[in-house]
Image 1 (cartoon, one colour):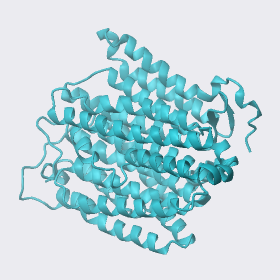
Image 2 (cartoon, helix red, strand yellow; image 1 turned 45 degrees about the horizontal axis):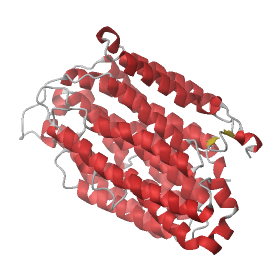
Image 3 (tube, helix red, strand yellow; image 1 turned 180 degrees about the horizontal axis):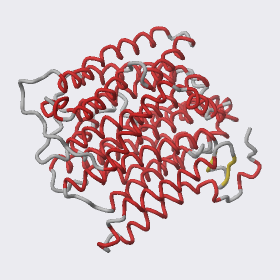
Image 4 (cartoon, helix red, strand yellow; image 1 turned 180 degrees about the vertical axis):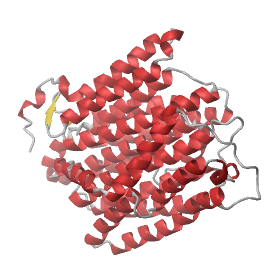
Length: 484
């Protein structure tokens, strides 16, 4: 186990990845008004992410704590840092062409992107609830602005306002929950709460359970769990597509990183939590899939799809234990690749003049853009959970963990929901390859270098991790020692 004797030390190496992002974001903000320099904002952001990724990889296997125990650097946090950086890097590649085609290039977008990732890293790199809340707010504030980046679009403005209002309510619930927990435990450090859990429950159980319930509500909003999902469809549809892609992956992963630490490490002895998570998981995956069946807008359909995938990952919180946590991390890694890949295709098609993200826009795609149609079909198969994609293995590991834990009914519900989702995912494939009556065939859209690189990475990741999951699975297993 980690030696926490030196936890009071101030060791900046614990936050080198965050510092790298902060420095790059500050450079962009300080030079954004200089037009010749502002055009290099994507390159500065990319460099910052690469440096941050290097520092994150250096932290692997070097577990320690510092800053009075508020920062905990372990493999669990490091794994999620890498997920955040990969998601942000792929979003960066997607955004360069998209904003240029839309005529809305703004260098501050890349600074906001990195600041949001920095907040996610803070969330994943601590066992202190106050620091976790601080990270959540650092993550959320840039997201509100990013949702409304298209200032002349009413839909984008609506998305930003809705996300801000709902996010403010969620933050209030979360902060109130932390206050109740602090009142009961006299600390916000999860390690100290675990040590004194029996005493806290026997003397201040009502306050502690109230705090846990409010905290759960706050994080349920961040991962878009039902019934806290109402903001998702409108925000995803109205926000710029690269921003929507980032929303669908990175904040969700950050929310799960925090929830895994809090509820499977800090409050693992609360007997009612598995039942609550069972209800949340079933509602989330079922409602998300059922509502996705009715959508004619692809971004809105993928919004409900992301809700259903949050339900699948919630199964890990029901099951608990090392195997379920490892399966959740593995699933999040694969989901990051194939979900961002799907949004990359939609974003690429939206760069055409007057394009919309409706299903009717996909008619004839296999004839005008055969490679793009094939790539989109691959990502739909991965989202459905078809072999040999990593989406199949991700669901297989989650459902297997549920079966081994004796939760047969939960696994059956998960499998049934996967079958249900096949309908709307294959509808995309059907529209691309077989529909000919509606609309006109899309004109071919030339690939830029960034789009090409993005699609190559996501395709190779989706298929490569499906054929060779061993290394990622081993890393996922190595990331859970914080819970031992």
